[in-house]
Structure formats: structure tokens, C-alpha cells
Length: 120
Image (cartoon, rainbow, N blue to C red; front, side):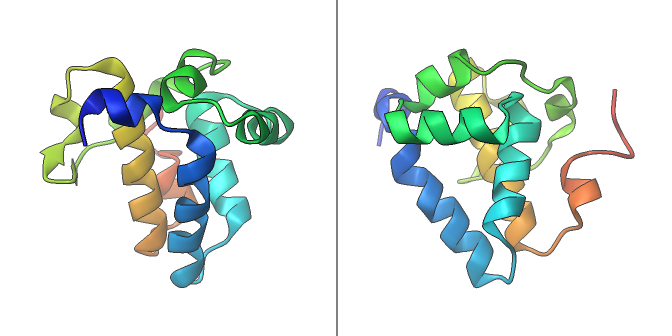
């Protein structure tokens, strides 16, 4: 799938997959929501509204109230690509989110996932 197709994909189609992945590993929808809200600055209510509207990933990130500056501390590989090396801004934001959900599913503590000890 090309990056343009991913940018145009609805967040509401991918969100249930994030929740499902987390729940398979004993984590919760609330933790997924906390991660998304931490990353984007959306409140839980605004996140729900964006999901109901079915906005595209690109729109979701462009309209994000305040991208967390600590997201730049997210390092590692997602889909065979180092997130910190991704040049295209929206794709990098999508992969940051993917990486955080992966960390959640792997059992990492929320404080570590949300980079609390490392914040800029």
C-alpha cells in the first residue's frame, strides 16, 4: 500500500485493529485511547468525534490539537523501517502511533510508552 493510500485511510477503520491488538495481549481500549490522546492532544471526546466522522489519517493528524513534543523520543522499527528516519511527516506520525501500540501490546509500562521519564 502506498503512503498516499495510508494517508487517505480512515482512522476509524484502523482504530478497532489497534484495540484488538492491545486486548489480545491483555491491554485495554482505554490504554489505546490514552496513547492516542497523549500523541495528538485530542481529548477522549474529540477522539471519539474524529472516529465517528471517519476522518482520514492525514486529516486526523493535521487537525490534532497539539502533537506531543516528546513523540520525537520514539525510536525503533515498524514495518521494517526506523520511525526516526521517515521523512514524510504524516507517515512518521502514523508510524509513531503504530510503534506506541506495538509497545503496549508487548507489555511495556504506560509511563515508558508515554516517555514520562524522558520528556523533553
